[in-house]
Structures are given as C-alpha cells and as structure tokens.
Amino acid sequence: MSEKYPIVAVTGSSGAGTTSVMRTFDQIFRREGVHAASVEGDSFHRFDRTEMKERMARAEEQGDHSFSHFGPEANLFEDLEELFRVFGETGGGKVRRYLHDDVEAGPYGQSPGTFTPWEELPADADLLFYEGLHGAVATGDVDVARHVDLAIGVVPVINLEWIQKVQRDKAQRGYSTEAIMDTVLRRMPDYVHYIAPQFSRTHVNFQRVPVVDTSNPFIARTIPTADESFLVIRFARPQGIDFPYLLSMLHDSFMSRPNTIVCPGGKMDLAMQLIFTPMIWRLAERRNGSR
View 1 (tube, rainbow, N blue to C red):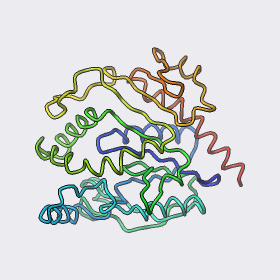
View 2 (view 1 turned 60 degrees about the horizontal axis):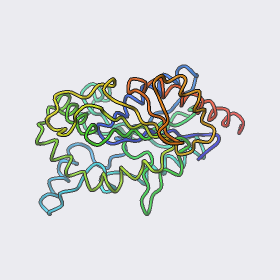
View 3 (view 1 turned 30 degrees about the vertical axis):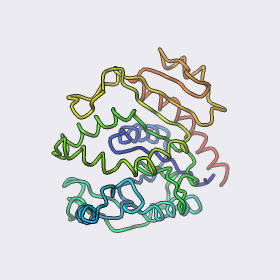
C-alpha cells in the first residue's frame, strides 16, 4: 500500500457486475476532481482470444477440462503485482488494453480479441483504479492484494451470478446455454481456488441476494431486478464506519451483524456513493499529506 500513490481495486467474477461499479467510481472521481488511471483486468490475460481458444483445445486433448481465464496459467499475475508495486512506489508502471470488440479495436487498426502494445501510465495520475477478476488475488508466489489500499468485492450469490452471465453472454456474444454451462463447469476449480478466496482479502464486499426463485439459473428468462433483491454490504474493518448515518440514508436498511448492512437492492449506487466518497477523500488527504 502507498500513501502517495494509492490503488483502488474492484474485483469480481465474470458476470458479477463489476462494470456497473466502475461507472459509479467514474462519477465519484469526476465529482471529486480525482484523476484516476484505469486498468482493466482483461489486459492481464496471458493469451489473446485466438491463442486462448487454441490453448483450451490443447488442454482438452490432454485431459485437462479446467483450464480457464480464472487461473494462473492463463493470466499474468506477476505482471499485475509488478504494476501495483511500481505504481505504489513511483506512480508509474506499464499497462495495455484488451480490445473486446470492433468498436474498441477500430482506433488501433487491430482485430477484436487482441492486446495493444505495453505503454507507460500517464505520469499525473492521483490513483490507480483496477476493475477485473484478480484485484485481490494471492498465490504461493504472488500477492496482488497486499499492494491495494481499497479492495472491493462484487459478489452476487452464485445462482444470480450465473444468471447474469448467461443473459450477458447470450445477448452480447451469441453463446448457447450449453456453451455457457460448459464454461461455468470448466472454470469451477479455478473459481474455488483463485476467485472466491479474494473476498476474504477485500475491505468491503457487496453481495446482491435475489428474493425471487433462482433455483435453475440456466433457464431463467430475465435477471432479477434490483427491486427484487437485497444488498448485503460487509466491512472487513468496521472501525470508523458511521453506521447510524448509513442506516439513516439507506431507508429500509438494517444491520445483520456488527460489520454488515442489509439494504434494498435498488440502493446500491447510493450506498457506494455514501461509503466510498469519504474513503476516496481520506486517500486523497493522505496522498496530499505525504508530498
């Protein structure tokens, strides 16, 4: 962690909803005048789209049915930790972009599913903002989490996470339900070993819990709405959190544990604004004080 060059990381599985959280932070940064250097977790995949398909096919041929984007073999964990370390020390570091589609790839004259060249971060960033799969990952050799000043987990209950993934992959990528089920099964060992443990290292977790039937996520026709959900917010370090204020602002909320607030699902954006704006203030004050 760094006083002068803080790092904020939002981490969650595919389909968890980290992108919507990123938009909330964009609002906070813009309102508070914070210049954040943004990093997408996909840019630290080891292989581009074509290479990943080839590697997966080769793994299947060799009897490995669990090779996935969630595990260390398919990601540059060492490079991600190095970026966090270097940024925390100097405010610099090397990044690149993963180009998901034609819109993103067009300005670079590249094909979708490829990476841009590595380049240096802008020198005037107030903080580094990461959004992706592995913002708090730790293995025997790598500990990304130790460099993060504010780590946030986005963790829908598993059936809701799968519903969101199914609906997204069908609508945006044209995948069949069967193909998505195969992906879920292939990723499960890496999910258990590399995704789920991160949420014990985060500072705040947001977990959306639907109050409608999600028993079979693979036949659900719609994603449960925010109004059909509760939001469980867990603070790893509740010291200094003004729970009475949060409860007064998040109407119909209550505390289920001394470090946990439960509120209506539609309050997620407001809850994040209320919780994280003061935290960003403190990071900025600490940074200014270290100059």
